[in-house]
Each structure stands twice: as C-alpha cells, then as structure tokens.
Length: 78
Image (cartoon, rainbow, N blue to C red; front, side, top):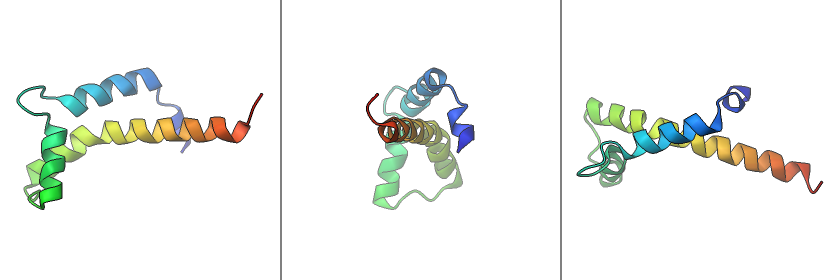
C-alpha cells in the first residue's frame, strides 16, 4: 500500500471533509446515502455512485491514519 503513503495527508483531509459534507444543506450526501444503505433503499445507480464519490476520500483518509498509527506503534518508544 505504498501508493497510500504517497498521498499527502493535508490535501486528503481537506478533500475528505469537503466531499464528505457536501452539499452542506439540507443534509450531506454521505449521511443521506449511508442512511439509505442501512434502510436497504440504496438501489439507484446514481445513489450508489454518490456513496462511492463522497465516501472514497473518507475511507482513504481513515486507512492512511490507521496505517500511520500502526507504523508508529510498531516502531516502539524512541
């Protein structure tokens, strides 16, 4: 997963927040689509695409943070 290490954390965090919360009103698409997924009503292709579009940066950010934490834990104290 070296490709994930090459993605800069700052821009990825900004993209994840902006796309994760867009549109800001009345409800972010990510929350709306996750609710539809839980209810079992996520079936239209445009809704599935929306979930993928708005959720991918958030998932990548989480993976990068978890990977960074795991790497720092494996190095142990100085």
